[in-house]
Structure formats: structure tokens, C-alpha cells
Length: 277
Image 1 (cartoon, helix red, strand yellow):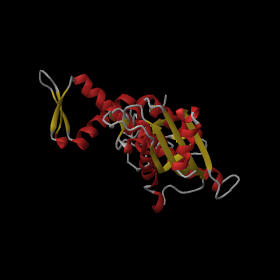
Image 2 (tube, one colour):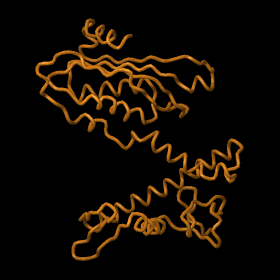
Image 3 (cartoon, one colour):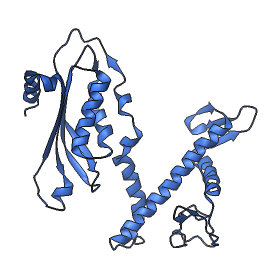
């Protein structure tokens, strides 16, 4: 039996924690070994302690002391270890993600070890953390705070010309454009920036434009319970402008009309007029 214990199809260097490539450490650690998954979690626990200055105080009521936040959080020891294990697994995921980028560089015929590409895997996963940050956010929470003091206002509320940046789930390339969001309040409104924020949460995920449009409209309808909602997106998709059919200057328009926006043509027409469509 090999002395290499694997996480999935990869093993971990016991010296630096990097995933082994063809049984070799990418950081060229000498005399490296490999670690079982739980051993590696223990190893990363220590690393987490050092990086964030966290310490476990083993008294009658253990604490997690985080001095860089200048505060102390009290929790049971098992919860402390669970939290640290989550961070350890996050680091393992980062290692796997970096290795995936290295594999893709090999696939396209590049040399991942040349100077210009040495830091590319790290840059890519950091950029992915930004591009797809919406998976870690709750769009319903964005609309949780509303205001009822509207002094009888009964007109449309519209936020138009909102920039949209998302990624096509079929090719993982960007589609970019503009969104218009409107709703007819039913005695309560939300801070106007929250409409743009809801759009951003959903757009920072792998998407198709049709689904993105409907998700934004449904979220506003369910949380604000207005009389109606209208959402229109117009985007250019790089999956067809930079590859495939290569048709530049083409944009795709999608719309979702709910409630009175669908049932009352006069409200729909007013919405379209106010956003200049």
C-alpha cells in the first residue's frame, strides 16, 4: 500500500500543506511526506492560530480569543474546534482550486512555472471569490429592512440603468449590461440601494440571463409584497461575442412583470416610458 494518503485524488505535503502533483510538492519541499485528512486539519488548525492570532484558553469555560478583533468570544470548546475545522477545510479547498488552475494552464499548453504565471493560480481563485461572492450572501436579508412612512406615496419606484456583471453558467465567461428595476409599493418601501444590491447578489453567481431576471423580480415581490414588480435586463454575452458565432454588438433583452405590471397595461406602459424603452 502506498504511504500516500489521498484527499480525493490528491495528497498533501506534510511540510507546507500544498497538494502534491505527481507525488511531488509544487514548492519543492525536500523529504516531504503526506498527511491523512484529519492530520492535515490539525496542521492547518495550528496555521490558523498563527495567522489570526486565535488562542484556545482551556479553563472551566473555554474561550476563543481573537485579539486582532480586540474582543473575546465565549463558546464551547467543540464549537471552537468546529469553526477551526471549517477554516481548515476552506484552506484545503483553496489548495484544490489552485491546483485546478495549474491543470488548466497545462491543458492550454502553458508552463505554470514560468515567471508570469507563478502567482496566477492564487490570483484566479481570489478573483473567483469576487466574481461569485453572491453564493455567500442572502438576498432576502438585503430586503429585510423596510419603511412604512411614505406619506401616502402611491406611485412607481424605479431604479434604472444599473450596471450588471455576471457570468454565463454554460461557458463561465461574462455577460455585462444594464438593468431597470421598478415596483409599485403597497404601503412600504425599501432603501433604493437595496434594489441594486439584490441584483448584485444574484448576478455574482453562475447565471443565465432569464433566470437572473426572474430571481430578482421574485425576491422583491416576496419580500416587499408590493402591488407589482417589473425587471428588465439588457446584456451582451461574451460567450457569443468572443467565441462561437462571434457576433459583436448583439444584446439580449429579458423582462419579468409581476402583479399589476402584468395585469395593468397602463402601469406597464408607464414603467417602460420612465425607463425610456
